[in-house]
Image (cartoon, rainbow, N blue to C red; front, side, top):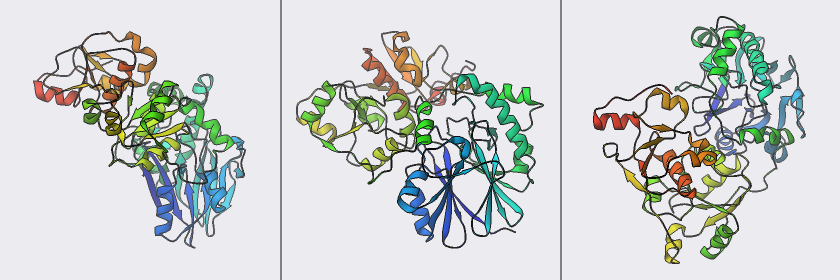
Length: 452
């Protein structure tokens, strides 16, 4: 029985898991760590480990890799696909290459699909396969999307993904499966609580591994692809070149009201990270609402432009370091700073504010705009609700009718973001639903509609 210790480091917001592998000699290997290395460093420090190796399964689209940062600051050896043509120091591996980890061995398995250069890493204790870091290949109950490289290559990569999953399925049933993408990831992981699995369990339960043939697999995989944030199309190339090495942790510089007004007048955008109720009660006109929570990074990357200076506004009890790190790990280097003193300072300087009305599930008095993802909407929505995904709203706000409107999502956070975008586009008489479709059904006793 192997005593190998693998510690998952879960980023709930991005829906991903990095892994810390204790090599048993005071050293560790990490797999698919982001540039936000706080959890990785803390886990290694608690165990008295030095990170000797950092393996990346692929060129990540949803976060900046921390492997180059570890290499530059700690002398960590980076292991990655030679086919990725990374432009920073690394050990370029090809299918079948092995790395001696000091008793344990790591074998590279070519598993293209999610990206063209994707590797899985099989961990061997002696000659015994213990587990496989599958990255964006075999996931728990799924396989990662294949449409992030280019539209022209989506189907070809889906067929490569089929072959990769079939290859992984030949491993012994008791081999652990340690994927990077999990529930909550826009890289196409299904909902669920399990983030690791085994080859045997996936063969028995994963619908894509049980597809009748390659064509059925491709149809199922491509049919499951939803929308994704636009920053996904930029980060792969940044990761190939190598993210800039940080010489200090990211931070939010303080800006007074006059500086904030000047920046806003010259094209900056104010991002309000306060909770929904606070934004509703009073906010700076034109501000974008993205409440600070685990998924802050994803929605910042979806709704805020990467090429406009961003000014943050928060409550005193919200951590500015968390805001800065969430922005930094998705490549947002355009943070101009934060409004010192928050909204209170703005009000004290006699600057204007506006409000957004909140309504309860039993008090809807206007047409409804549902801005959830299409699969969420199809699973159950209010009868007659309009539907437009939040990620599409900036470019399609003109399609939304003017007049009284209740904006809704699952809880209220995304809906407030949508309302703030509509306010920027000139819409008025908006309200945000506090709750979601199930709350409405419970409050009214009416049934939800299903289907797109």
